[in-house]
Image (cartoon, rainbow, N blue to C red):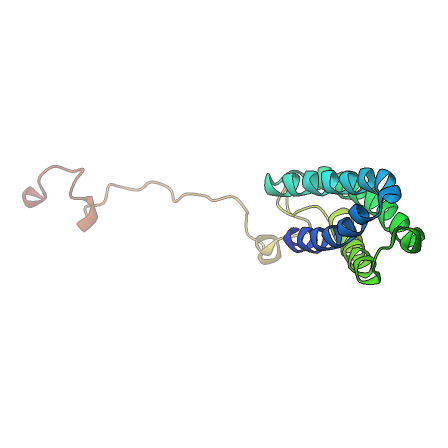
Amino acid sequence: MIPRPTTLFAVAALGLAASASAAHAQGPCASEFLPLREAVEKDALAVKALVDRKAPREEVCNQIKKFAASEAKYVKYLTDNQQWCGIPAEAIQQVKASHSHTLKLRQQACSAAPVQGSGGPPPGPGLSEALGTARAYTPPSPSKASSGTFNTLTGGNPLQR
């Protein structure tokens, strides 16, 4: 099962906010930093939308892969340009932690087995085969009409019987 992505987005938002403040303070970095941050935010929102509408696992997996790739570029840029842009070490640690969480989610979403009960017969013999009985329900053969307590509505007046 895919864990709820709210913690992922909370951690990502915290890291983005911390590194965004550093980017706004440094003008030269902002031209390269902002498009990367916007791509990560856009991909994160796309993953959240897919999870919220309970999209098929394959679709979520593909979007998480895209999100992880854009987040990896973002982490690499922040790490490579930490000194030049004046990005605090705590912000980079938070973004790296968020990225490692994204990688775990990607692994869970993409490597999980398909959900059981998706149609078809169950694998292997069931209990009925092990006991030597039939799987299908066989109704009892109709014998004469009974006149029990619960059969009072179909046979007319029960007092006349």
